[in-house]
Image (cartoon, rainbow, N blue to C red; front, side, top):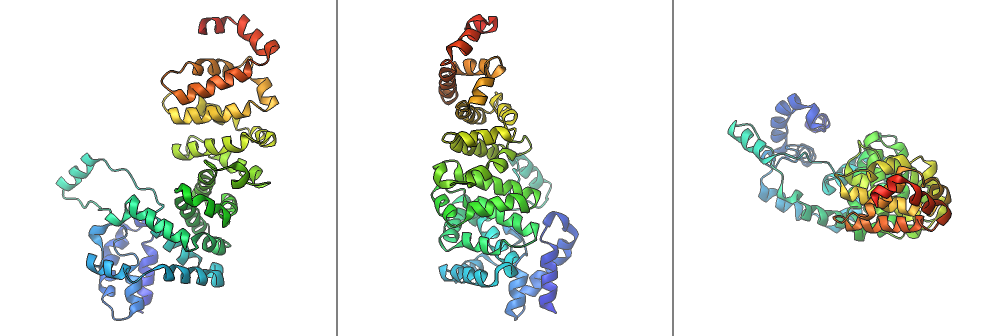
Length: 367
């Protein structure tokens, strides 16, 4: 019965913000259950007591250190073997372990002044565990990928639970943060899995899966990262990331990754236009307060200029003026270099662009 009670409390407080009252009652019970002689009860009680707040940890730091020393790569391999045999039956257990180890959740930014004010008012201020810093997270992520975490995620992904699929998407995004791991993730089916998650996961999971795709392809050869038909399949989820409600980092990675296949394939350029992505791209191109997004958008538009339909539509529009104006952007070398290249491409058409440039009074004022 104690094991069942611990399971119920753990399941209830999985969402901290929704269970404040339960936490007040449940945490003391979990602390008491942790002292049980039954290892199953002890383990389940330890599962969620205190969450990521080190000041509320159930176990003493010395006990945690001795516990972590008992785990090694053999445990991770055994977990992968179990997953491959059990499949979706252990989906929630596996993805929860991977998510907790890779720490893929957004952390709210707390101003130092607000922390001091809370301390002065004697309110509890959560403390982040030192092992949750970027260096330790990176070590854990590398160990997970090395021991087969990506194939394990693929093995358990055939589930109808959208919450579990969201955790898988978050985990894959955390894995793809490290550039030298991306080739292995792609080779082990990470891209194919992310593509499926962009269709089957929850709303937030779809965004995370699309962002993982953007990460995997941002600095890789598009012919190897997205071979064949896959290059067409990734266009839609990447274009969906070009939305003002999506965080800027995902916007930037999506622009970079779209520019990659657009640099080598005319059919991919046509697919981007078919997705009606030009207005979305131009919205970032017009930005004056985010130079990296603006530069990435200009690089994508430059690659699209090699598509005849897009090239022919440029003269006589505001795009033409921006290519000229941005060419003289002294403070942003990346933008000015890209814009100068676009301007040079457009001037190849003497009968079209140059005639427009020479006779338009607006361009006379610019020059």
